[in-house]
Length: 395
Image (cartoon, one colour):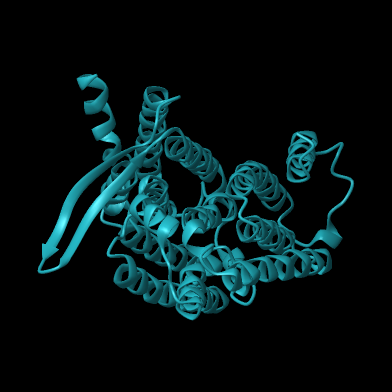
């Protein structure tokens, strides 16, 4: 029993693997080391991501079939302010860690070939490690405050990755627009965090769930608090009216789009699902969730049909699919929302890998210029078929 507990206490290492990869890649990312080329930075990050994946699998086996456990680490205390780093160790959170680190591992291996001749590969590897650390941290976090901080980290990561090819003016504009759009949601989320802390006196999801079960808030305050709390995930999941950033983010290298459209948006939705007991305090909030999700699902699908850029087509389909997750949360069906996230993430990662294969081979993203590829690229076409069937829940 003691050895199991000690094993679970090592769970805080998992986000650190990604951040350690970022730190180790700095000599190549900054150009201090040039003789070896940038590939060693990618190898180091792949190795550390594999370590995070293996560690997560081992911990998932330890917690499988057991009740969730909360680990608390005091981080900062002054006067009445007590900020504790709280981790939830459960089959759900460890499964999310394995899912995120597995997708990150595939995306980084994919990037070795896709960016093989790009001298920015070392910088890309460092940013992917930064991304991965933030996402696995969100999966494990039981603290609303630290989840907010990690969402801010994802916003910064998005800015840096979208602006990866910063010599192009269009890329710089896209990175700025994506950053500012997501910052709107982050700012409103911070206001919601402060409000809920004042109302409940708690900042952990487990304590907030217990408080919400017996809370009696004024309906107006409950509605405003719920709308503020949902604003952060709304921006991260590219929902109307904060949906345009995901289209702009397609200026980033395709390996980054693999993670952004599968795991990054899922992290925002995962926080939304954890907040569901608080959002349920107000029927207005639930109604807004359903309305926004419906508008985004329908509008995103229609806009995707009108696109001729393959990456932008998939980006709008991501917004549309996440709209269904918002509808599920608004209808108080968090289990259904989690199933949608898992299914969408795996299928969309496969579709973006196929899209990258097409772009790398044909040097075009224009759908009107593509056709007759079944005989020439059978593996890519098979990947598209499997991913498409997964998107419509036939696999």
